[in-house]
Length: 219
Ligand code: ADP
Ligand code: AMP
Image 1 (cartoon, rainbow, N blue to C red):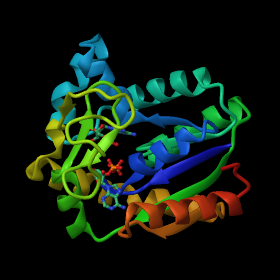
Image 2 (spheres, protein in one colour):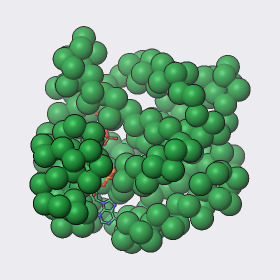
Image 3 (cartoon, rainbow, N blue to C red):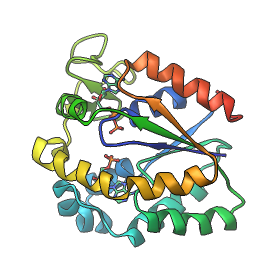
Image 4 (cartoon, protein in one colour):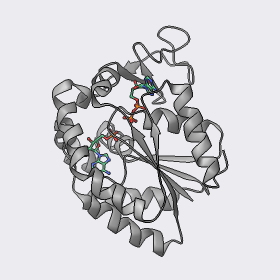
């Protein structure tokens, strides 16, 4: 069964996905993360999408669908978290075909509701471990030991190029363009639940867990 984490950039989707993955009961597929890996490895695909992503624009739906199908079919878990996908109505409709073909099901879409003013604060303080990708924040989510990753003990960190305020504006704009259409599509299927993502990480975590349990997910 699939759970989609749906919300604007910086709303905390990746952070909550990290918590869920720790239980060993979920696979996390973040299309943004997969694309950044392609860029870091300087693959053909990475070179194709680098400039587009740095501007905060979207690579084509064709690229995204190929990427998602490949990783979805490779994943062995019964419970899959999608983060950052689908992002256009066309992706939603194309994804329906993949779901049908592979007997998969979207059991829940968690809508991360947050005031957009908070996003700048969250995104401008975001950084992650270069080795394992764990996400931190300058103020709200520091590693226990300064400069050392809690998970892999690496000491090298990085910030995303597309987290600069000007690019963030474009990313939020892009999110707003397709939000309603996507939410309405899944709301008609009765699988959308909104949570307050402006709360602290633990409070959001409780809301996510409660919602997952209500929809029959194993947490
Ligand atoms: P998304 O995956 O939706 O883009 P992230 O999970 O990367 O968002 O979170 C964006 C930034 O905000 C990160 O630096 C993260 O540590 C921080 N963050 C995540 N959730 C919260 C929260 N509930 N309160 C404060 N900061 C948070
Ligand atoms: P994210 O890590 O989810 O914030 O995504 C970072 C960037 O990756 C986005 O600004 C887009 O350029 C690209 N991206 C990730 N997922 C998608 C998607 N489903 N459709 C189009 N572009 C995507």
